[in-house]
Amino acid sequence: MNPYHADADDFYINVNLNTELELPNGRDTVLHFFEQMRKAYPELRNLYTRESGDLVLEGDKEEPAYRWVALEPRRLCSGHVNPETPRSAYKQHELVLEMAPHILSLSTLDCEALDVLFGFDFTFTGNHDEVVVEALGLGAGLDGLLAIPGGRVVHYEPSITFALEGDCQTQARLSIETRTSVSQVRSGDYADDQISLYFTIRRYWRGENDKTFVEAFQCLRGVGEEIVSEVIIPRIVRPLAQAIASR
Image 1 (cartoon, rainbow, N blue to C red):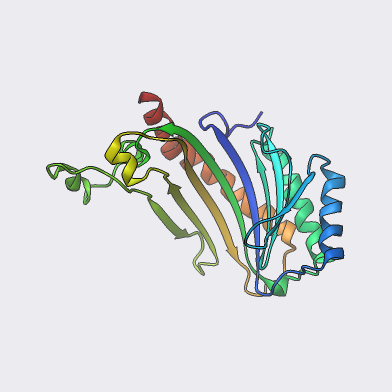
Image 2 (image 1 turned 45 degrees about the vertical axis):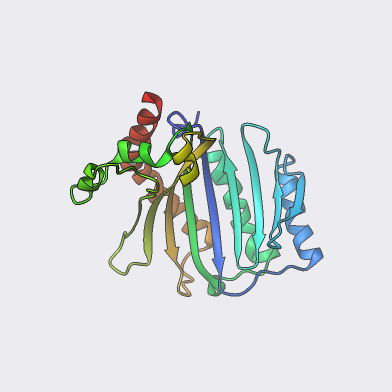
């Protein structure tokens, strides 16, 4: 059972390997990489190119849970939406990071940063920005803005980035994305859309070669799991879920 899924409509764990140089885009190399992923996860059957030129291999997005992998010009991405357990997502990401040096010729010298993202989506028909304020507040310095006659929140997407070490090479970022437009607030006609909460642990590489990509990922996910369990879920995810349920 996934312990992170209980308080959100969707939960996902993604990994992004950001590179200094562009990734290989030759037909044989790309197809070989995706074929190896499909051998490990046969549900990865849908290969397509985005308008941006990014190459994506994914499972059936109509299913409650699905996997995906993407090759962007300077980023290798792997994601698992609603995994049965976190370990199910971790195994996929480890395979991607194991194959990257051999198939895609990725070197630790070429790595700019490695990201591990824990994401939560909440479906809500209403003013997303208002419910985020209700759940998390504005803070003492900003509360007075809501007391202005006629004042109403039309955009509120809190975000914070903080260092986890003295050298600032390992950082964490929390951001919330709302999808309510001003026209919806004006008319009161809201779409059935999702509020997204992203918590990312990033390690800037700086040419390090003392760890493999997999080893670095394992360290980052451990840090991320601890913060998600002790802070993100009890102090942010659950209050947001409760505020939505109260509407």
